[in-house]
Image (cartoon, rainbow, N blue to C red):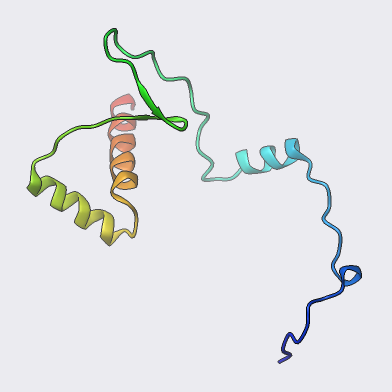
Length: 99
């Protein structure tokens, strides 16, 4: 086993190859777990403008404490955030409704 004792000289570090963005996008889209293309969401109902957080619509809703405890427990058991768990659950419910 060798130890790194000093920073490599610039000549020893290979130059980065240029990236073909179109080929990269095609490769990623062809992955078995690639997400389907996201379509534009329908406009917000009149009187209910959407507050955006980056590219996502920010929402607020209330849950019974017992349900929130169960959501947090499930999210922790999957090692994901509460928001990620809720997004997954909602996505599955919506997709099941479209089947």
